Amino acid sequence: MGQRERDICRGVLSVKLLWTPNSNLPRFCRQTATVERKDKVINSLIEAVKVSRDDVLAAAQRIAGEVERTPLIESEIAGIRVWLKCECLQTGGAFKLRGATNRLLQLSPEERDRGVVAFSSGNHARGVAIAARRVGIRAVIVMPADAPQVKVEGTRSEGAEIVFYNRRTESREEISARIASESGATVVPSFDDLAIVAGQGTAGLEIVEQLGRSPARIVIPCGGGGLASGIALAVPEAEIVVVEPEGWDDMGRSLALGEIVSVAPDAPDTFCDAIMTPRVSPITFDILRHRGATATSVSDAQVEDAIRFAWQKHQIVVEPGAAVGLAALLSGKVQPAEHTVVVVSGGNIDPALHARIVGPVQAT
Image: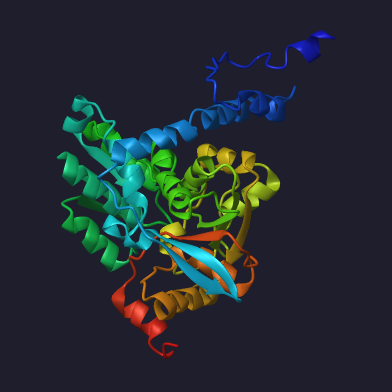
């Protein structure tokens, strides 16, 4: 064997991989080690291995009693029974409290004294605000100026301080980093964080417990991919399908290309504000790529149909970004099949918008 073949990581900074009995490290190495692998790609793949199903199980123990065990309800689409995981009924109106609680409960006493800063269009904002209030620490939230008023008010009602920004022209990450630098606060990202991913994955553990088995397929709304990647870790036997708004399908395009790509600068407007994420992270992307996740996208009109369906059939209020998975099944973008679970990830929708969508059509 020649020197080139032996030393595949020549020029790459040394890293240490810690073996655990339950890890899938041999499979990881066989799939990803190549002679021409660049430093940044190796580092991102190593980062993905740092969070595992064991972390999700630990998160479930850590946040027990702090979050709701949300219902899993039976539905029917095209004559086929499917299941809806109703995270829209979680405290704060969305799944985000899971990851936020898991992250904040791991802060040191010194970090708690300095508080936290987060950036979000609303659901992560409120989740962090609730978790911070319960822990007794200060929270500053960077929110887009066009965030739905119901989300702004909900976040403010939990005692958080809000800083607004323009999502088209300003960087929420840069603003949050500046606040953290000035105050010493800990930045709590909405998806690009190992503890956040592990916390979100606890919804997947509940699905398995409530069904009594692993579902064959789980359809999940996707913005940055924290919920989808967490569930992918929690339920390794299930097929994972992520759904995004049309034009904001950066995870789908990234998975298809095998590398992370951003949303186009001229991306169309969508009312799915909760999942208007311009770029996914190496953590979430690598988990979903290694799990063989597939992706599709839906239109705002198809999302409206899903919001209407959820209300008429089940009397549950679902916000646009949370309804994309249901929209994919109703529209045929994802074919309904037995043993499918759809995650309905949030219910924080402006009441007037919800009334406009569901009002014109009589309940059946």
